[in-house]
Length: 526
Image (tube, rainbow, N blue to C red):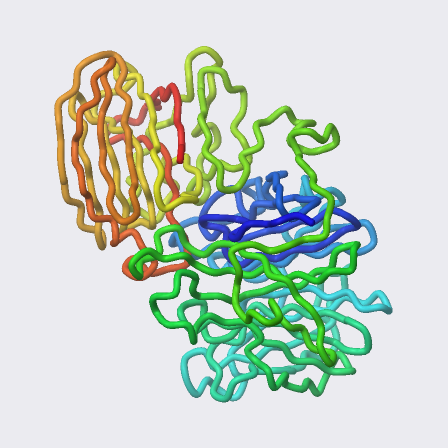
């Protein structure tokens, strides 16, 4: 037996969907307006994970122009059928619901097949025993919404040759609770004699819940489980350490065990800075219904799994070993020496649709980031390269070549929640400035002058407080301490994303020439 620690994907990994293919498990998450989109994780024991790519890694697959950071890609579903992997998702900014396919989950994935007349969000695919494929999704009450979140779950057959919805759509369910808000994230399964719809309701905040219904016929009628919701933390009070539990997906191991992935958050003092994370729970069956963590009824810190341990770094067939890349294990620290790197790992994120060549690695020199005439406060493709925040306490550093900083350009390190809420350590000329942005208003909370050819910016986050220091040579000097970053939380900033941490460059001149800033290194350590 292995002991798996929750969350299995710490930090900004919301809306998890998982599929089991033999002894392999593939998991995808929402990525909203970050590029590339939809990270793909792989495991063979549910304990050790490796990122094997991103579903949407080409500009042509992912139009995100002018998307707010909590727009873009919502709630993907990954499924496998007869040698082909399918991911269905909603691009709420451009095009709506679409499907991409791949023979290998490492990619390449196809161009998106946008589905005509597939309104709503959070779609999923179901392959029935007769080989037919069905679309299941959500949309507003066709008779008119009586209140915010008055939506229905509907099913329609999908022709995989033409990528057209065929036959008649049918509304089959609108939630387990009376007057339910936001029945969403539905997944359809055939288990034994029943079709099951597992879905979320109550919204993706404090009232989030997992509910289930079933029918012996795909088109219904579906019966409610009188034990609904089968998982929620909304009754545990505002001070419970794990909240917002919902948006689940079921799967089975070769050993016959059933599990469920879902999202939840771990706020500090009521403030969530890391966003929604991916958790795991054990599922058993009683009287034909799934029971989550029987005898406990809530998420646990650890989950026992009857699988053989698998360590990707020691498996010559793993993506980690085959590609020669460092496996950035979810929840781990990482140190990047850009002077010795030839390519970036799959864990790095850019904003929206970055221009080609924004990032340029030069062996022996460093990473040259093009300074765009766009600030991080705009809903555009600002020059920002980041990783997900995955801990309440961490230290992020970057070393910048001061003499590479062009005139009227700034560069630095940032913790970003969205366009209007962020903390930056900014180098401009011979000055480093600590800038806190709240609700779009920028405030300097500390500044110092620096000397030397290189400067290292050190950003330390300790829960809901942060500090910025600079290091020139061997001397470390504080710029600002005790910075209140509660505003970088979902509860204040709003939206659906967690914070990311990274480096950026901006060109504040009027010159139409390319300018780049050299970063020697970046690290995220715990």
